[in-house]
Length: 113
Image (cartoon, rainbow, N blue to C red):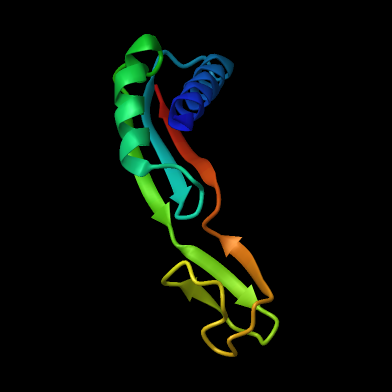
């Protein structure tokens, strides 16, 4: 379950930012999870809700999750979303695709007080 290590790292990052900004607590976290990130969203949210209680800064924080679709570009000029995990260009059926978005997990915004 790598979601645990991801949540631990996220909580550590939030605590560091809170200390750096002289905040007393983290109120809200906004994360963006790519469809191909390998992160199981439900498990991530449940793990966060469980382990946020171990952080004095994040114990009452609200987590907001955005799912990033798989955005690609092709050498034929197509740019768009792949609806399924079938790695062929929907326009030219080519296989030389570049992933633009949808593979990562990002901390997008942190609200502190």
